[in-house]
Length: 387
Ligand SMILES: [Mg+2]
Image 1 (cartoon, protein in one colour):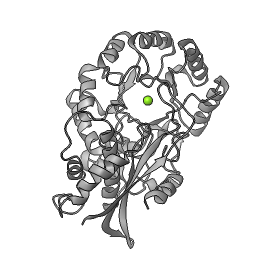
Image 2 (cartoon, protein in one colour; image 1 turned 30 degrees about the vertical axis):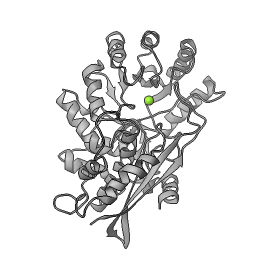
Image 3 (cartoon, protein in one colour; image 1 turned 180 degrees about the horizontal axis):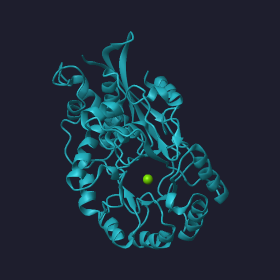
């Protein structure tokens, strides 16, 4: 059993949306195919992956470092001990050989995309949905039949007023979502409060999450926290710089509502530092590490072990990214939920075409592997780019 080819390409997910920090006019993702010599139904089994939105494609790192290391690996070096499948951990260790510790940035994003393709391949060779494979291997067979999902939306668009914001949120409710999320921090506090009020008036403050995308200094985060407290929001996401743990910890002592952060932390070590130093409260706060940005599912398994070792429940984990990998993880490993992107970052955002959302819950489905073939517009683009 061996990997016969690894193909990568850059896909555009550009759009005219923006959050408090960036616009997405130039946004790209890396798309990867890992082809094996395992045959099913007369065709080679291929695993597919892509990096999550927001950090751009990582073709240079993939082409110059990660992929050549796998291509050069000796016969059998990437296989499970019994030789019956590929071993994602051996593959992870091989692709990251000779990489110094620390500085978990774009490299973690590149590895996350490649690792996604590897897990898709491994589950397809087992002829199982990934979430079932994860449940069996790592969760004693436990799994969730349905996963709490919420749409990451409420972006700032040119000329978007309160009416259009409300229309967007009404649309999510019509699609079956319960909790909705909106961006804050790109306009003055008073204007944002009007936006929050408009959405809370529609769906109820308890079902509104707000996301500042790391924009605020401590003073601004505290001012927002104080002004937003009466809404009883679902969570206040990424108030300050993702690596400013002191800011987060200080805010947590003064804002009694739930905080959520972690989508811009890219490693086990960074996640551990957040838990140790970020003041996050295990009885109410949410950790949003995205496996497709942070070395992949293999690293995420270690992150689950780490947070449980520090007294947290895995139910506090709700991965960022709104992709099928996160939904599979959440179902098979019984996490707290998954983000969803029904309207943005197309064609990569969101779940399989047949995924139905009911009262804010999604079922993971029975598609083999991660199930990208069942998200037709995305899969057509993946096939066009990497075959
Ligand atoms: Mg966010």
